[in-house]
Image (cartoon, rainbow, N blue to C red; front, side):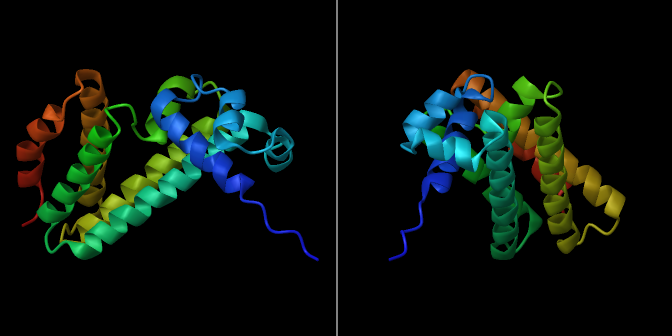
Length: 191
C-alpha cells in the first residue's frame, strides 16, 4: 500500500511566508517555522537541506509568483489602467489592514534585513522585483503606454509607490499613505 503524500513542504512554506511578511528573515527562526508549521523536524531538514535560507528563497519565489498572477488577473478584470492600479492598491491596503498592520510583502521584509548579506536572498529578491516590474510594465503596455521605456519607468514608479505606502502604513498603523498617493499616481496613467 502506498503512503499518502505529505503536505509538510506546503505547510512549511506557507508558515515561512507569513513569518517573513511579519518579521523578515533575521527575525524568523528555523525553530519557529518548524513549530508553527507543525511539520516534523526531520522533514524540514530533508525537504530543505539549505535550512532557513533555502526556505526563505522558496517562500519569496512563491510570493512573487502569486503577486505576478494577481497583477495579471486584476489586469484582465479592469477596463482601464486607473481601475487596475486602484484595485491593486486597494487590495494591498486591505490585506495590510486585515493583518492589523503586521504583514508586508516577504520580498520587502527580506530585502530590508538580508540584502546584500546573503547572495541567495539578494538574487531571489532582485529577480522578484524584476518580475513585478515586468508584470506591471506588461499591464501598462496593454493599456496603451506605447514606449517600453515609459512603461518600464512607470511600472517602477508604481512598485516604489506601493512598497513605500506599505512601509509607511505599517509604521503609522494607518492607510493614509495609500490614500495620499492615489491622487498623484492616477493622473500618470492612461484613461
